[in-house]
Length: 188
Picture 1 (tube, helix red, strand yellow):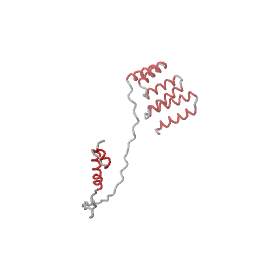
Picture 2 (cartoon, one colour):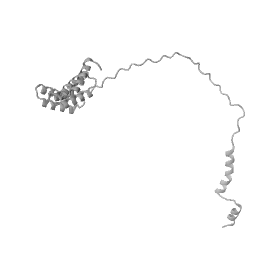
Picture 3 (cartoon, one colour):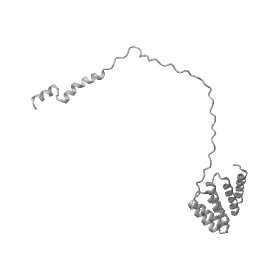
Picture 4 (tube, helix red, strand yellow):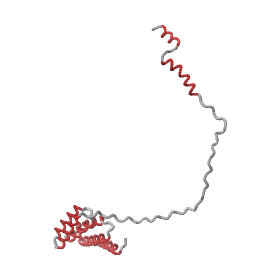
């Protein structure tokens, strides 16, 4: 160790960057303590604009808005191929060929599965074939898809009446007859 380093250690003095930081530290601490003098007078006044005059008006409650009932959603138009198959089914049914009428309607429903008229026609064919449970289910499906079509609903409920009578469900047939009467009278 040289003589200078020994003297710095004994005297507690440092050199280089550490020494400079130690000299700057008190100056920085004293500078941080300096704050502006408190104000002795009242705060400067800023003129406030006069508030606008309050005008009281008699407020009428808004008239209730008349909202028309939304129209029942219309099913999309039936594809021409499905309509052609339905026409072929009608011809087969008129000729007494219920099996062919059934096949044509099933094909039409594969093309247009959300067409309530096709479901109702198939329900009628199944009823004529003596398949009462399927006839009722298909008429119910047609009712679900064809909401809002009163004539179609009436035809479907008549199919349901006949299907329930064919199954021997007199209580169910009576409830279906009540629904037919309700639709015929225009209630509901």
